[in-house]
Image 1 (cartoon, rainbow, N blue to C red):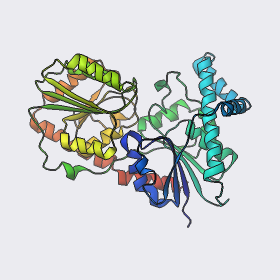
Image 2: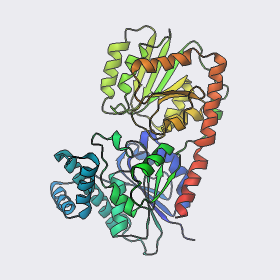
Image 3: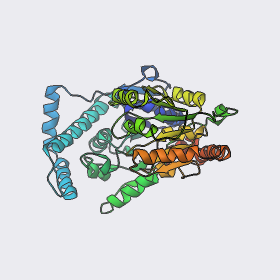
Image 4: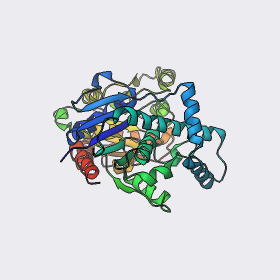
Length: 418
C-alpha cells in the first residue's frame, strides 16, 4: 500500500528548541514524504534532518500588491461575512476595526499558503496520491490547509492539533479566533493535546456539527537513565524555568516571587527568548542583584537537547511554570522524564500532568507572587524522603502518559485510520 504524503505546517521550526523533531523522528517512516512548512527557522542545520523530511520556508508577509489582491479576495468570500456575524453573536457587539483587519490578515495568510502548496509543493502529485494536511497549531496556517482541501484536493485528510492560546478564546485579547466554523465544516479531525481542550471544544461548539475530536498528549523521549546516580544538592534550592518571556507566560513575576521564598541559598536558571527577555534581565538585576541569598542566570533559547543537558547538569529541585494559558507543556514532560517535579498554574491541561503534592504542586490559575512563593516554601519544607518520592512519582507520570514512542504511534494510527 502506498504511503501518504504529509503536509506539516508550523510557525516556528523547531518549536521551543526542538520538540517537533521528536514528533517527526517518531512518525517519518509512516509517510512517503513529509513537507514541513514553516515561517521561521531557528536552526537551519536541521532543514532536512531525515531523508524523507523536507523543510520549506513560507514567507507570511506580502508585498504591497499581494496584500491588495488578497484583501479584495477576502472581501468576496461568504465565510468572511459569516465570521463577522459569529463575532457579533458571540460578543454581543460589532468587531472593532482592528479585529476586522485581523480577520482579513488571517485569511490573507491562509490563501497565500494554499497557493504556495498548490502551485509549488504539490503541483506534480498524482490525483490518486494520498495526502494528509496537518497543522501543529490551530491557526492561520490550519485555515490555509482547509482552503486547500476545499478548493483543490478534497480527497485529502485535514487535521490540526489544538493547544492553549490557539484553542481557548479567552487566551486571546479579542476573545476570538477567526474562521473556526469554516474549519469545522471541512476538517476530518481535531486533536486536542489536553482533556481540558477536548471538553472545551465539545461544550463551546455543541450547537454545530463537529469533525472528529480526540485527545492525544504530546510526548518526550525517556531520559531517566541519564539521571541515574545524580545527587541533588540539599543545601541549595535550584529553580528552573523554560518559557518565552512574554506577557502570557508571566515570567516577569519571578524576581518578585523569589524575594518571598524562605531559603538561604537560591539559584534560578531561565531559558527562553521572547519580547520581554531584556526587560526580564533588567528587572532581575534591579530586584535580585543585592540579595546575597539569591543568584540567577537568564538565557535565550537553546536547542532541545541542550535544555535537557542543562537540566541533567543542574539537577533542579523543580521546574516552575506560571503561564496564563497552556496546552500540556512539553517542558514539564521533559522535566518529568528526568524525574524532576513541576510547579505550575492550573490552566489548560496542566492539571492532567501535575497531581498536587504527588509529583509537584498545582497553583491557582491566576496566583499572586506571594501565593507562588508559598507553594515553593511548601516544597522546601518537605523531608528529603518526600522530595525523593516526588521525583519518582514525576517519572512515573511521564512514563504512563507522556512517553513519545507510545503517544506518537497512537497519533499516526489515528491519522491513517481516517
